[in-house]
Image 1: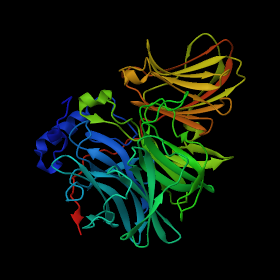
Image 2: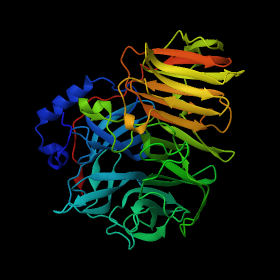
Image 3: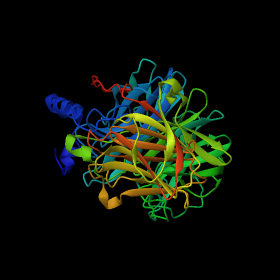
Image 4: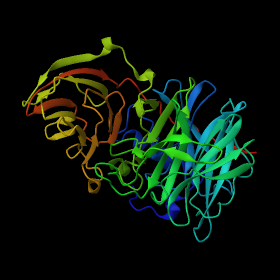
Length: 507
């Protein structure tokens, strides 16, 4: 596979490529190591931002940014998957292709919302001129109940407001009291990030209201993937600011994703908010997007990667996957993230272990490479406690809880194939209360850790050997009582059969 991708390689359209080349890549990727069992992932090539996450026609719809010809950021398509339960997803094929004058260099990120009988897809069309200068267009397409796509002939927002650069993208659409609104990620002329607010009565004519007015006038050089919504009476602005520096134990990744919470005035754009908070404290989490579920719940999903960083799967012709969906709530002023109830499993199907742990390491009587593990702690006198996942000899991924500092650390120094070692081997979060529960989801090449019933989440990719399947526990300077419940998840298979790719029509 190519290591350094030329512009010509990255901007080839799929329909200009010999089908045999793509078929061979798909076949190669299907047999590659580290393919996930229950996370949304590409058949081949590179997956990035989630797009158009929505409920429509009795199903969940998830689109994502996709470059089909290798693990590079190239000419982007929207790929379409559906689910009945947010557990198993099924590929449906290409939804939108870069095939018009307004998206010639990529169908960039956006959102979806039902209007009438159709699902409206609002996205940024990326274009470049002969000097490779960018011009963005905010474009609309729609999908009917038969799954047929059509693009609107002209963009609905052209140009950039005065005071901003051409870095304008990722519209997030919603309807409030019969009026349509969207926020779009932007960059000011002074190279600082912002989110811009627009409104429309009919989805065709859009009025620029102004910036979402926050306290952050110099907070990174671009805000990507903004999302504005209300949960349990609290207004929340989610965005991915580029260019933040580390701050204590926070913001350790190259790029970040987080939120502001408070009270938002949709008529003026004024936002009275609390300090910025990260959404996830692991290694690999970016560009989250939310949707309103069929019962009014707010559900989030994100790209399980960090932009501009390589991953061990690159050499096999594919890169990246999605996180598991998370239901958001606000309880006692705190944003909580939990798996949907469809992920709950019968107690009688679990394997159990309960006991006291101390200085002597102990292997649990179950393990694997694809499972859910729930842990309950009590009577903790130990200064530190370790849970090692995907264990084999000197290979393991370690969760460490320090009861004195009330911190949780995820360490992938010994996880297997190195992952971006220059970015460090540990991620640490300070907990708001002592550790009582962990819910851990392990797939072939990922770990998602839900802490204290969703107070905190840590999401990371790992790339261990296929024989690394043990679970090991140990305490230091004291003991702890632990109770474990373990469910194998090998039977949850993402439906990734290849489907025929259909080009949408323009209307």
